[in-house]
Length: 161
Image 1 (spheres, one colour):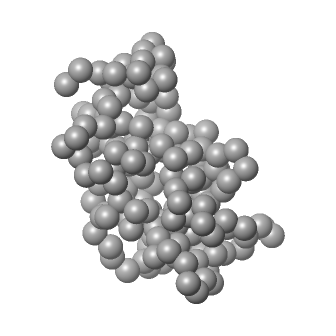
Image 2 (cartoon, helix red, strand yellow):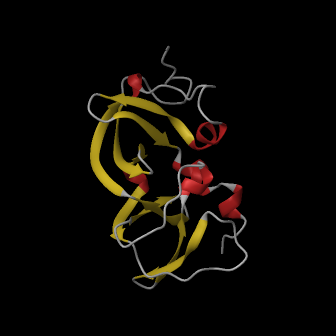
């Protein structure tokens, strides 16, 4: 497939660093400048009458964060959240949320010229929340999360406080 990184606003001769997240049997990447920190799954408070992707809220060092389960938004296999899960705190501009992940794998450098644009063969919900994908030699396909788009999803923004 033809690469179209320039059309996605990414210079072809650039490299990006992504934190690789394992979620429901698939690998996702979040640019490291959007990853504030990774924490063990916290004690949280459920919030009534919100979208099913919002697991609840928790306090970390005096700040309140929402926990989002992107498996719901991406229509991935949903398994019960346990103490083995982690929360990756993502931020963009003035918005910060926690995202449930199974594991944080590594940080990899990805050549912008090797990032493929989402295709029509992918589920529509993937296309909506991804910048593209990358074929890693060991891990296989890594779906690259468009963090600003994820954080501004209508399912999340509707309950922003």
